[in-house]
Image (cartoon, rainbow, N blue to C red; front, side, top):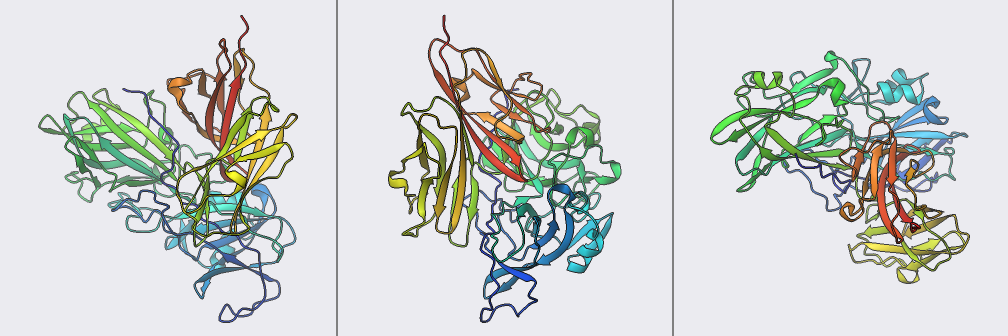
Length: 557
């Protein structure tokens, strides 16, 4: 099999903004007067697609319900106590939520696009404030995240879940208190399911479709607080996706002919809840025609090195069959008994998680940044210019004041764009270039466009020494998900590995389940060299993108 070609680029992503100063004054034709202890927040959401692909026959992947549920927990971390559940309301085409005043730190669990019921301890409940209070009262955030589950699928599941429907989404934000002076930070909604696409490029094989998914989770957590997947969830919590007929005469999703030599299920994707596929033994059975005969093949969720790929929420997995070197099995029953990813079937995997940009938006336009942290290993005071972050926006409004990129720290200078003014009326990416004065170590860049604001943190460390070096921390207290080396063919001296530091056969891209990633920098050469790594991490309950720019000193001979 070819090496896995995996990138964390922008597909399967929707990010919504929920930010506005809280207000309590009465407004004509708006919600009735409520108790003085309630604080009103206006919610801003973007229900567009940002130009990202959408599956025609799949779910409404980029649609957001404008009346999400807001679950309030008082305190920090997983021990925060449940306070109340409130559904946002629509008035005059605006969205508001009324939350009880709280003097201490609160965490808001946002549930968007909820299905008809939520489940706790295998019991289904309608979405009401009383039901949330009954099942979550006296419990903390950890309990809520572990036990608040989506609607249970059938076994067998005869249709792909959520096709033609909105995908459930969630996020968690922290605020210092619930008061009129507080602004709710942006909400980065993530879908609770992963998306699976299978395609074929072998001219001797015709992909007909995915016949079944075996051992898929029947439910999913609305929000995964730790990012850790539950293992061995038990046979009673696993189901099969297949058509209603037990003879497997039809496929659960059909492939579409793209070209004369390519077929794909892109327009008929699968949606799966998060799964540790190795312990749950989750796999696909596909159907295809090989040299005139129709056969079944068993595909595990593994990369080219047979390393298991767990199915994560808000992540797309594209399995491309590159070579079919023999006949499959005549029946699904025989394929089930075979080894997964058998020797007659080679494929590569493209993993797309979240987005290549961190996005925020309002009802008019969006603003995206390629990374919210820039980690640079280089000397300061040299006059060298560095691209700290890249911006994209579809804004067309010429804001007279708030259309700026500003350094909030002395010693960190914005070089471009000119005057620190964000270009508008263009969807072209805009590089933000900076210079660092002597002595600079840490700072911040503020990006302000209308009412959208993003702060980019910048940290400088000394140039990497010429000897072999290992880096395991890219941001303080980060839980790492994946990373890739930019232009790896010309930067093979930068190699990624899991937490144990052992380089596998995918050093250009690493995707881990335990939050640990190692960057190995090989011994230097006779000249200074540089390279860039992008890391996706979880910190403070947010997915964050980190750009790491490394320069390495010259090796002395």
